[in-house]
Image 1: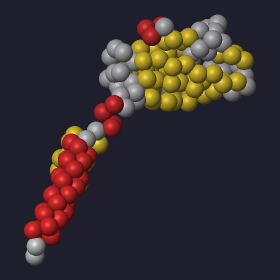
Image 2: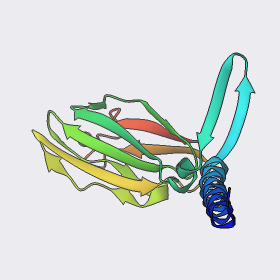
Image 3: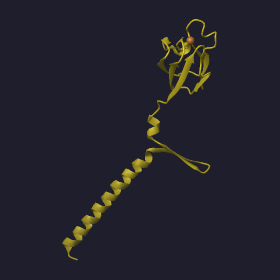
Length: 147
Ligand SMILES: [Cu+2]
């Protein structure tokens, strides 16, 4: 092989090595995006990095309201959750109020639907209720449990 040919071979090898290095560094970046890889029993649990940025966890509930009850007696969420309650009024004149979270849907006449959304930023057990007339005393109450 002459000298010129040898230089070309070296250049080609260099280019191949550079491409290989670029490819492997890209691969490393992709791998570093995966934060947690753990074995739990027979299951491989992989937590992809992108789920970390998705902190807004919306918990949605449909609460049917009628004379004089709510379809759900209990709503359970985790602290920090965004809670959305769809109030589906099937019979009568109702609303939903949660004093501790300054939630008030406004009163609606059936058939109608409205919704409230808030962040459950404190733990505890809180009462949600209908503020119309004596509906609360008649049983239009439920418990919001924030854990
Ligand atoms: Cu009511």
